[in-house]
Every structure is written in C-alpha cells, then in structure tokens.
Amino acid sequence: MTDLLARLRLVAALAVLGAVLGACASGGTVVLLPEKDGRQTAVSVRQGDKEVVLDQPYAAARTNAQGPRAYVASPQDVNAQFGPALAAQPARSARFTLYFVEGKDEFTEQSQQVVYKILTEIAQRPVPDVLVIGHTDTVGSDQANDALGQQRADIVRAALIRLGVPADDIRALSRGKRNLAVPTANGVAEPLNRRVEIIVR
Amino acid sequence: MSTALVSCRNALVLAVLAGGVVAAHAADIGQVKIAKGQVTIERQGKAMPAAVGARLQVADVVRTGADGSVGITMDDDSLLSAGPNSALSLDNYAFDTTTNQGRLDTSLNKGTLSVISGRIAKQTPDAMTVRTPNAILGVRGTEFVVSAND
Image (tube, rainbow over all chains, first blue to last red; front, side, top):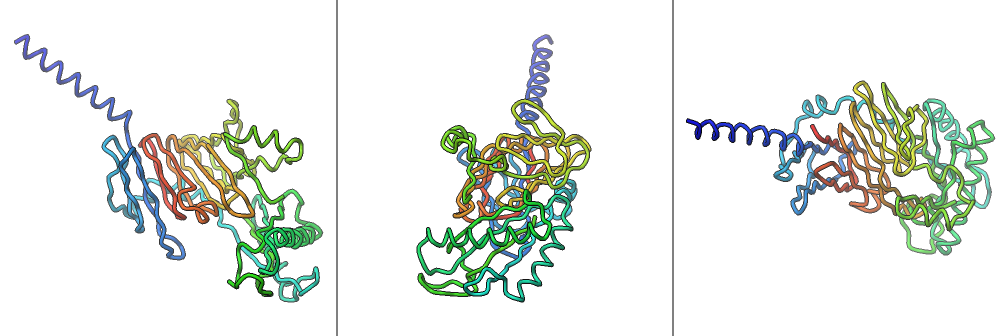
C-alpha cells in the first residue's frame, strides 16, 4: 500500500517535472512566406546538428526539444498567429532612377518628371529616409568609379535638399560599377549604367 | 561616406580608428517606422519609449507590450516587424553600402516576428540570422515569420 502510494507520488512528480521542463523548452514556429515576385528563396532552421530547410511557400518548422519538425502551414494559421506582426510591417521602399545628360550635371528631361514623383513619394511617408545611390558604367577603375558614383549621388542629394527635403533625411552613397543596370564587359561606355538610384523608405 | 560598419565586437575598434569623424548617424542601423501600443527600446540598461522615427543602434532590444507592435526598417532595407509581447534584440550589424557585404544577426527572445530580408541577405546568403531560444535561422533572401516560446 505504502509502496503503491510512493510510486504514484513519483509518477505525479515526474509528470509535473515533465510539464515544467516542457514549458521551459517550449518551442517556436517558422513559416516561409510566398515572395511577391515568385523568386526561389529559403530559410534554414538549425537546432544543434539538426537542420530543416524551408524552400516552398508555407513550408514550416516547429522547433522544440526534439529538434526542428517540418510541416506545411496554411495562410489561416499564419494570419492567426502572426497577424499583428505582419500588420506592423513598414511600407516597402519605393525605387526611382534618374539619368544624366552625358557629360553634364543635369538630369535628362524625362528624369525631371521623375523628380516630382520622388517628392510625392517622400511626402506620403510618415518618417521618410532617402538613399541616393550613384552608379557608373564600366569605363575606368573601381576607385575612379566609386568616386564618380559618389559625385553623381551628391549632386542629386543637393538637388533634393534645394527642393525642400530635409538634409538629415537623405544620404548619398556610391556603388560605382558594381551594380550595372545593363551588364557589359569592362571598359564599355553605357548611358543606361550612368544613373542615380533613389530609394525612399 | 561609403561605408557604415557597426558591430558589438568591432564598435570599439572602429570608434578608435574613426576618431571624431563618424557622425551621429553612422551608429544608426535602423529606424522605427510603425509603433502601436506599448513599445520600448532598451539601450545600455535603460528603457525608453520607441516613437515612430526613433533610430536604432546595435545591441538595442526592442520590446512590445500586450497591446504593442512595431515595424522597423533596417539600413540594408530589411524589414522587421514584431507583434505583441515580443522581445527583439539587434545583436550584430555590419553593412558596407558600396559592396553590400555585411552581417545582420538578431534574436527573437519571445513573441512573433515577420522578416523581409534586405540587401545583406541578397548579397551573401546566410549573412543574416535570426536566433530564437532554441534555434538559429539562416536567411537566404526571403520573407518569413518566426515565433519564440509559444
């Protein structure tokens, strides 16, 4: 009798301990969402030496003490659990491109129109910050093009400031010839690569 | 200025190297774009309310209350947004705006997080990670949600 009681107590104690440990090691969920442009992407979920790779929309993993367990989530699951987080997503950045008249510090006529679209976009954002990124074609060295890209970005930044955008909200950067709009061999003059990209976010 | 590099490990080294040249903005790695309900930023042991427009630094912990949610744009265009009762730590950040090389390591200690990765993950797969108390996620240029301790 007392033996049985002791055993029951032990079982009960183990059950409580199990529940406590279970709560401590309580897991989480990871769900890959569809990309807007349908690109192939992935997230790896690692726990120690165990790994699950999520590479399809709504591929999901539950992480707990046993390691990641793969399953397929539904959009309803995602909205139920992550609705507030998804609703707080900041607006995606808006991108614009300005082209220069060859050999001058002036925008092309078409690009003048784009400037007004940029100002409108900036006005619509609650706390806008603007990146102005200068790009070049492949004529010249990395170093020379980094400097040239920066020069073009600085010109555009100054123009936006003149049009009333607060200086603190705009940064001018250069990517030189590292991000070509039109892929070319090295040393090729290409007007479409001589551009300044504006990102409003 | 073509580079903006900040991380836990090299912040001190950079501060020494850069002397007084680094502007206040150089330490900013992201900005709060959306804040609803209770949202706080913990920086060096002090908590302050996170208003829309607040700029974030490496090692900041962003917390939301039961009614809170927050949306952050990181400097590399990554978008991080957390739901109620969440704690998101910005552990490590380095981003070279010229080469797009960098690292972004965050931890979701509790709550829910949605992630749209930016230029760091696009340039270098797995250079962006999200840690939870029991897992590490490697990001390969993507959009996903993650929860911790639920």
